[in-house]
Length: 236
Image 1 (cartoon, one colour):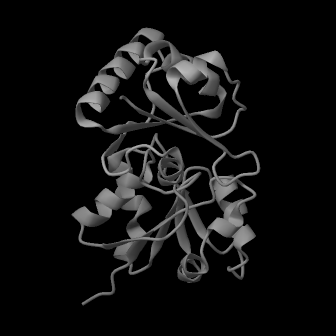
Image 2 (cartoon, one colour; image 1 turned 90 degrees about the vertical axis):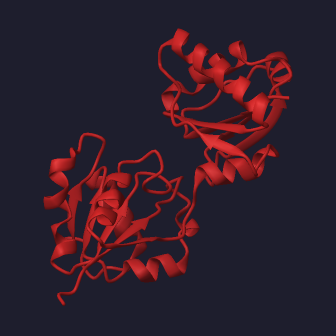
């Protein structure tokens, strides 16, 4: 039987200066891999170079797997698996496959009988949930809120009702330049007694993790920097 490659899902640091959050075991398992898929080739090369585990970064094969990638493109991108080579999937931040196009590669690998191995590394979602003090036994991640204010308000209120009915913590992420817009949507549309947590720059030098009721946030409005953020809320 021909050798078949393995797909490795490889976490990246959430904050650029937090390279130490990548465990030694993950680095060792990455070292033999020569084929990688990444959202941005420049930042991927920079990350792989910073690990200092490859004899030559130029000798590695790096291809783009991003939100524009279509399913018909996957066979060519993942041909190394069929050729018996391992492939590593890199996220831009945190864990591939979670609100990330790496899920396409994992789905393809499962559909074609290849082994899929997630490696250990930082997850901003779980770290924020740990820090929040909110319900960590029942929670749901919803990706990004709608950009339109009316649609965002409708979504927030619906998910708050679900949170109240099921005692379920709701999680969101946002692009850094929209942090204050999303925060204002949450303050405007959530009930005053709902608990709201914000984690900014998790694992980075600018890390902030704070949980208050919405009415308390309204009494001390915050302005957030343009850094990666996770938002969580739990209705009383």
